[in-house]
Length: 304
Image (cartoon, rainbow, N blue to C red; front, side, top):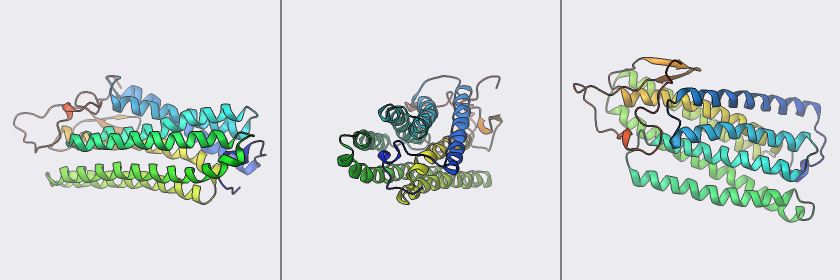
């Protein structure tokens, strides 16, 4: 079912059986991943606090909210305003929440506080401008009184915000890859090169998922795009644990990979300080960050 990509087209629209199967599959995958991510987040961190922990938890919960909102919108007769409200809450937390996750992770490899602050301001600016504009136009496009006025605006802003947030995540992932590769060059060991290749592969997958979302929107597959987006973000958050595990290995132990506890499929090493006999190049001081990506906080929960 191709469309121009505005919510008003789907009010009281009859969804075909094949489309129902596709939507159900996407929703099921998202809900299953979301529940797993919530449990994994609560089980992984020993201390429930910090920007990194809360951004991971909020993003994981928002996937459920966003999916429920679209299920209400497409498959029930509830008020479009109610469905759109649920969609918007989940969407805002999912998109900006994931960007905050990526920003928090940068504290482990990036020492430039001014650059980190500038990136945070960029995330806030994009969130305020893109979310606010999209919310206003989305509500207007489902209103019977103002539908024709707002539809064209929503059609345009939906594509703009997708590209903006895609570029934002590209910037965050690119900085992470650059800084991580720079640190690994200080220790030119085969194990570190393998870790770098794994990190690059994971980030390529994340960027590929963003690209698929943009392509679906520009291909006028709005209904597929909005339900695939939570699936993509659930996969990206799940990959975040793999990235975190590799990154902690680099920061916490310069002599190779130390003991690793397998938590829900994500390898997260326990954090132990380096001994006085070990030499370590001038890496970012993990303890000095405000995020929960700090030594002693990113730990596998005891007994897990």
